[in-house]
Length: 66
Image: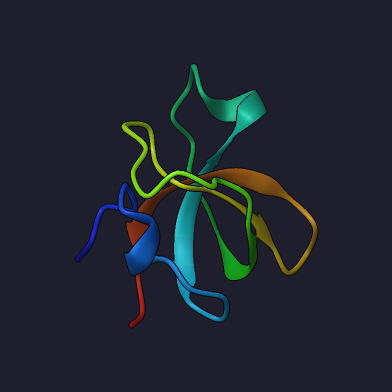
């Protein structure tokens, strides 16, 4: 299972776990489908920032499907 820190691994349509901005302290994960990639750099130490299909924005912590 990839950890979501490399932009090339994250693509629209993948099912992922993200940590939303409001949940950063608690570490609560939210599962969803990637709609858009918001991080432009090829890597990010806290995970690539994405917008899910339901409109929520968070950083990818786990890629569930490939």
